[in-house]
Image 1 (cartoon, rainbow, N blue to C red):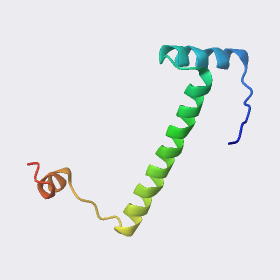
Image 2 (cartoon, one colour):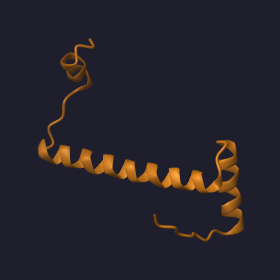
Image 3 (tube, one colour):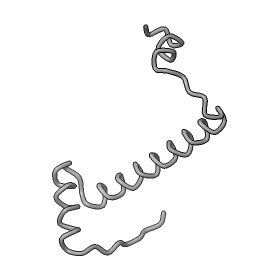
Length: 72
């Protein structure tokens, strides 16, 4: 496992600490989870961009998706 350190201005750290406290987490846990969520968001974006490229820009309406899933 790798360990790293990050420098923040005091006011930035206080904002991060306040959010971590709000969520009942340590600062380290809050930062780690936030970064991992960002990585997941980026992977989702790349997947969506790839799917859109493979579809040559063709899209399906929400209504069609609901129909295909039998959720009408």
